[in-house]
Every structure is written in C-alpha cells, then in structure tokens.
Length: 275
Image (tube, rainbow, N blue to C red; front, side):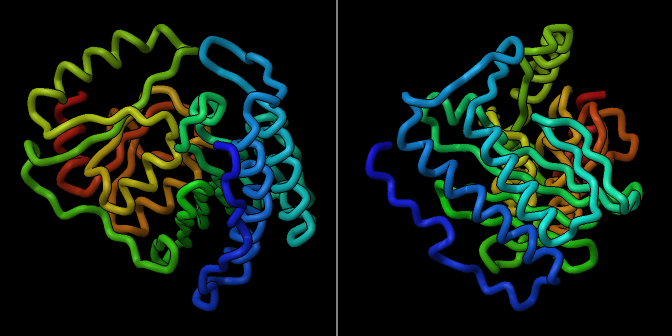
C-alpha cells in the first residue's frame, strides 16, 4: 500500500478515564505501530524468515517488539516480559509480566492483507489485569482494565446480545504448525456451519477476541494458541460482559491451548456443540 499515510500517533484517544498504567500501554502500542504502518507500505523490501509451516517472522515483528520493550521498560523498569519472538525476560518485580505479540497476523501483513494488530497484556500474579489490542490500519484501539470496562477508541464495548444461534456470526482459527489439530478443526466446522449464520477465519486471534468484545463476532474458538495470542483479549472479553474458557469449559488464563469465547449465551451453546 504505497503512499499509505502514517496517521499513527497523530490522533490521540481521550485517555483521561484510563489509569496511568493503561496509558503507558496505549502509548507503547502507538509508537510500535508507526514502524508497522511504514513497513506495510513497503512489504516487498522486508527481511522475512520462516519459523515453521505457515509461520513467519519479519524485521517488522522484531522492530515492533524492541520498541514495545523499550517503551514499557522505560515506564515500568522492574516488570518482566513474555514475548513471542524473544521469549521470557525475567523482571525484579516477579508479580508483573508483560505478555506481548508485536505483530499478530504476520502472514496477513506479509501478503498485504490489512488485518493485523499489536497485542499487549499485563499479568499480575496469575491474572490478566489489563490489555491493549491496536489495529493500526483501521486505527482501532481496543483497551480494557479489570473492573474498569472495555473500550474501542473511547466507545464502551459490550458483547453482542444475540441469543438465536442461527443468527450468530462466529470466528475461528487454525494453525498450520500443528497438523494434529486439523481433524479436530474440520470436525468443529462440520458441527458449527449448519447451525450458525456464518463463519470467519481472519488470521489474527487477538483481533478475533477484540471483535467478540465489540459484538462484531458473537463467538470464537481456536485449538492451539499461545499466551501472547490471548492475553489482552481475555480481559477485553470479560470486561465487555463476555465469557472466555477453554474448549472443554475449564477456566482460561494466558496459557497455551484452546480458547472459546462469546456472549454468555453463544459461549454456552458453542461449548455444548464442540464438546
């Protein structure tokens, strides 16, 4: 997308109702997004390596991660990190950990598909207490703090109120790196398609969860996700009135494994269908 205007950081959301901590996360996301938007206009020149089947890492992923680490460390120097590209970086403050995906939807990004995001979650002890998911191309900033609600560009978010399953639009995902889950994925599609209004597989788990929080998707499930894929989305869904668990119904935290999210009605129905 040559000539794409880099509007990131030019517009500021009204952050007066956010905590200082969430404002730190928002600012870090804006700064990292500058490089992503610039690189998205020049993707043919990017350095790219392959991590595995259908999994890529680019210079954009790495540079975004560096920017996020720098900005967050500057504001909270003692917090630790769990990073998609760099792994675990322990902090002196063992209770707080940033969980970061610097570019969720790398495959979309590298193919010129304008659907990707920066995802930042904050874990305090064993609980996600704050999350930011920023889509720089659409300039949509999804944020949430435990007990303070979920927002998108200052608009309060609520999950959808749909209760008629045939009217529900659902999201899902499938990994190329774990073919042992392909059969389970295909089986789930066979069960869900005949009883729903439609299905979307958009390639960025963080945005799928943000869309559940915003009521754009009524429900979402996926079989193999990493902590950085879901950390920010967990608090967004919950603060928007939704329910998020594992596919077997067990509690979902920022760990590796399955995820099942939706408004309370849809999540319960999906749980029954997918079990």
